[in-house]
Length: 430
Ligand SMILES: *Cc1c(COP(=O)(O)O)cnc(C)c1O
Image (cartoon, rainbow, N blue to C red; front, top):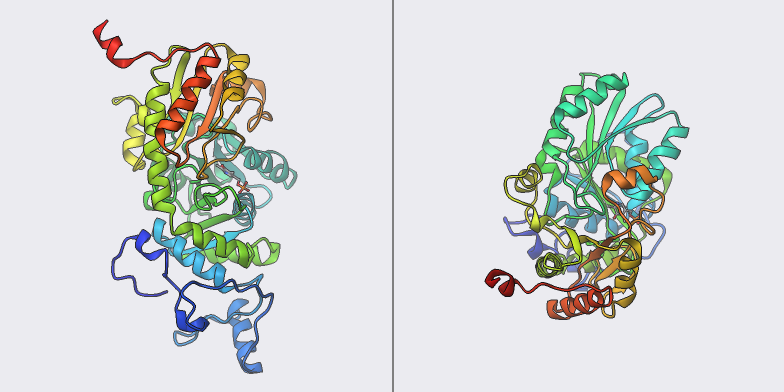
């Protein structure tokens, strides 16, 4: 890696890890659309393989050789180096999807007979992988809810009789779609309590919702941070990708597993993500500013029971205390429960003109969806009820549009759903 001279990550995203002289003076890193790389000699090829296959360690004077694009490729390596800067991670592995990053870490850290302890709810694909794929390999799961205390979790472990088998604690915070927060450092402490000399218990955090700008789980002691780079990192709703970051030793294991599963991202995806990283901070900062304004308006609507937004957490509550401890900003995901259940929610969604009706999140355009019948349709009814995923719940991913246009669109759609926005000034006077 190159010297950074203590600059901020956003100042490094245009050039870090790349030298123009490597590519005919090209200012931008080209797309290395190649499957394989030419060795200068047979001896060099042999040396590259010895290091790549862990037959011997790399000598300090030796560069890591390019071999074959399933093992390494400049677009992936430079992208990985740049992603490391946001989370101050040792190393990173990029994947062809968020799900491939997640499933590769789960397959690398869990073996038959092991148990995964995870927060609930988790992303639908992750939930399926844990409950069906891992289960078929003899890996059991235990789950806890947002709001559960250390005592609750320890009691759950004791009552399950599986305490000694836990190998991984897997968290998703803020939880989708309700923005409930899980205390990352509390879970890291539990993982340490469960660890023994010959059985480390790791903590992995899906940081898709907040990161890599507004939450840094590795700094709170987590071992793995995971991203669907499809969302904020890609940021333009035009690419599917994923990433995993952590220390050198763990990411080396993840990269080895990736080599044999063959689920690394391609050079074109790597190049697109590098392009996206140049605007990551301006995009996320603007999206977060817009979301605060949108949430404030929703909070004043007479037909809305509750707005789930980190910027509206009440000081003095346990959720607010976790927010203060681990989040740097409230992000740009807003959910709310409209009175009148599914019919009112559908009327609202069908009346939107600027905001588009689609799942996914984190892109430059604002999107709205109905979790109970779309992203979370597979969640069983009792769990939906417990987690507050009701018929009236609407989720909005706020984009970079002008906030007045977003608010006007939301107001007119709320009116179509027979809703009134209460004017704050008038309220105060009354
Ligand atoms: C989208 C998403 C995923 C899955 O990512 P893909 O890129 O679609 O594979 C995982 N976790 C969260 C929180 C997500 O939003």
